[in-house]
View (spheres, rainbow, N blue to C red):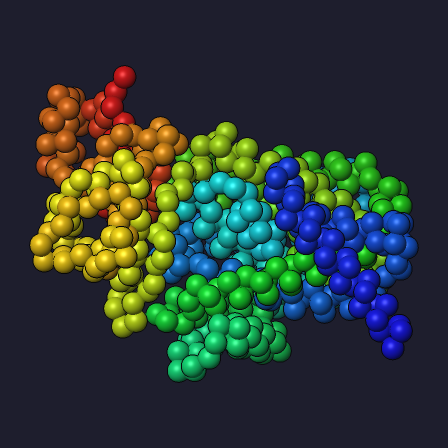
Length: 566
């Protein structure tokens, strides 16, 4: 019993310290995951704790379970519209991008260290994929609102790229273990099987799980546990069938999270706690697995590999993969820089160790250094790079409350408190109500106002509306004072997407307009430039005016900010 209590004290103590430091890390711009890793290293055999932990099998099992929970949580938070927007570029990065990155790192490692080319390529496969835990955590904790095209591409890529990384790793492990074996068409079939079964089982069982959860009446905590256990079953079943469990559980979360009524805000908060527990426990354990004194033997080549990956291999793979898609050079550069490595490469580095491949401790040590450098350099600088490359978007003020309406397509009940100096102050309710918005309730001094009298809105009123999600920004602009950051970014004036371009430019006395844009609405002009893939922050120039997408619904610009010529 004393031993049990001692283990419990050590484990919970490390978790408490890691969580405490993780909560403080955002103030100094360091990713919280790095803090957990460092706490684990400090408690390890080379640190002040002196804990000896080298059980690779246990680390492998725990890491897989933790990654499954993290990917499930990531899928639950991905809107289907966002998934459609970023699926093609993310899938290209997750397949072609990983292959290019692995090949470049493999060639560089072979040249730098003089190792067998198969060993060099194996290292490329191990560190070729980005990590979902790192990407989800760092983007959420960066303190900036990254534009949807970039953020969703990064998040979905990290959820999809595991099959390619696992395929490359297993193929090279097989080549090193059995040099005489042939790995041609069979290995291609394995890759197709990983992607195909992962997608089919994930989507199919995700739909089944969401139907079950829609019919179960339970509290939020139990609901989140049902989600986790159901997702874990999908993960295990897919792996047993020979598919990618990581891809399957991400898609299960995606399907479940997008079913109306399947996951409310309280359920997502419960899932967020589980995801934090999973990733903090996983990085603490991986920190215990690291022996800093052994890393020093290969520190210089490991640093050079890490720099090559961040500055050459990842940028080249991103640039080539995104050629067919609408991304600005700033967005491509940011995506290249945010190729965060985390737990997945460390887990993949365990594969050859468990298989007994020679010299793989070298690969494991290099992988650990690459992960540390990635979290420290890329993770810590993400918010500054987002602002430098202008891919961040000012966040609008959120409603006091927002509740999805059951059995009503894309309708939410939103409640706002009208601030002093807001646009709605002093206006009649009817003047700011549109066809897509239905006023439900106004509370003033704890009394309900009669909406049929078209009351004048005053500061301090609590106004509830029934509206689509795309109208949230408009209502926020009406009820809250526009911040300096929003005014600087979007401009002082807002225009609806239905306004004709001719009328808009004429109203500002501008006559220089491209012939093909005449007769178009603002929405159509954005679609002409960006297709149906516009996101908040996209910019369009119209005869001297600069329009910036303010509110977007399914790739259509509903509202745009106007920046006047100097």
